Image 1 (cartoon, rainbow, N blue to C red):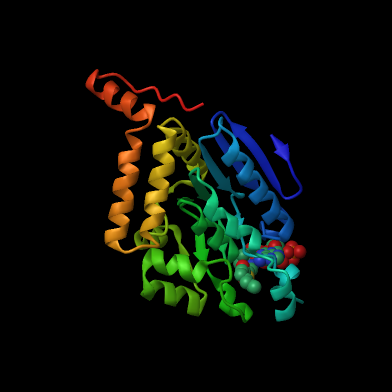
Image 2: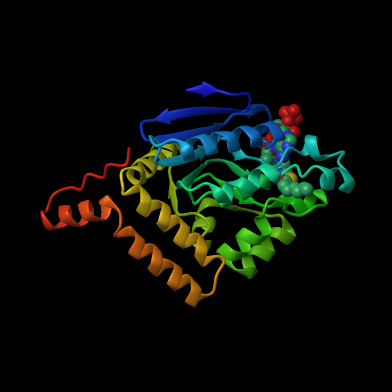
Length: 258
Ligand code: CO8
């Protein structure tokens, strides 16, 4: 367990856990926090002992947005000269699965961070929204793109143009959230999912994540071809031999990833 300035980093066996830790500002995402999260994600991604990653916040807030105090006095010229969200763009290149465990507020940049993760497990009191429009701006870390691709135009427009917040159940029925659990079970559920993934055939997990992400960027013909090549590549891994041999022998597979 390591406490950096704005986050807590833990290794729970084969799972890397990042806890956003700026309680006084409801985990508002400042530059320091972004740098720490990205640095840690890169370290976990490069570490053979880690098979999946969980990002979480506090029971009250996953993150209530980009840090408004840090942004308030910025001018277009400042933002062009120094893209204050550039660190977050590297999340797309993390190969291991990243689960967002969301309790309380996931607003603005906090919601966008959750959307950058591979899937979201939410507690039943989680609240999701993109309130940027109420601050005179709009989402700036991919929210208008990822949310629209994920749930379609109608609800994306509603949320982005009104800035209203929705609860965990509405988010689940819209397809934003994969699972909703009681708050007290949130971290355990996310860690269990991450451990389950970390115990599978690691190259197949990487390729499965790549295949799903490819669907967001490609047409069907190219997407299906990409998936087929990845599927064929999975047969070059020891894990495929082990997974299928174990099934035929009616025993549990043992994937030797690390
Ligand atoms: N930034 C900085 N500080 C924050 C933030 C934030 N996003 N959110 C909350 N805080 C602080 C509050 O100022 C308060 O500090 P203090 O105790 O010193 O007064 C503390 O956290 C606790 O907050 P509240 O007292 O407001 O707690 P409430 O329970 O009354 O309300 C809310 C909770 C509803 C979450 C409320 O805090 C709120 O509305 N927060 C702001 C939500 C928001 O607008 N988020 C979007 C931010 S903009 C953004 O993310 C855009 C990203 C892309 C920008 C692209 C630009 C280039």
